[in-house]
Length: 108
Length: 116
Image 1 (spheres, chains in turn yellow, green):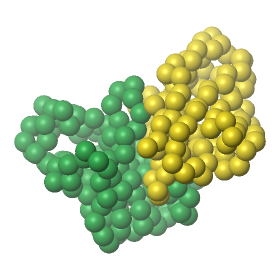
Image 2: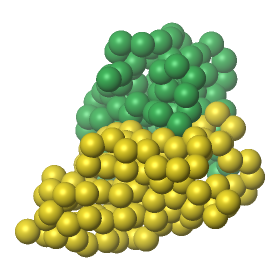
Image 3: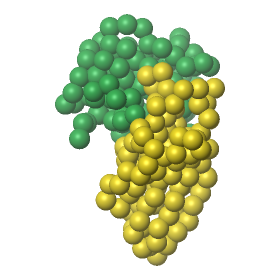
């Protein structure tokens, strides 16, 4: 089977940096995706790591270490609009399996 | 980016009735679409994979006779919740991947179903 573990909640202040971790156990691994979902909205794709290392896209970066079965999403210069749920996900057998999600609250 | 639409965005129905939800890829063709349900503050649970021109593949524990999926064209998949009950009340979301990259899914805006 497969499992993805994320913290359920994270709180940070505007302008800060926050890291959301994801550890996984999967039978076969191709890479790790990250999605953002605002309350009541659709998930939107943020990033994908198919190889070890850091991928940077503006204020957001994502990291993967296959040897540690671990990845993280790093959000810099936090803004109030970053308050949302963040999901790590792995492609498996032609479908996407999601972690339980981390609810990020950004405070003034 | 690619656009996926869903209709309706919300629906209220009485117990025992059926509800159809449409998922359309607006600017690309999708041979495969996915249907999820999501309860408040929870993750997305994959219900089934919708395949154009063939039967849907359901995840374990999902009743195929209750959640009917039809993928009649390369841009349209429908989910019909039959004989709805209050416990079927949920947020239903569809998605598609544009060029075979499963890791990057484009999601519809979701349909909130309330069964009274």
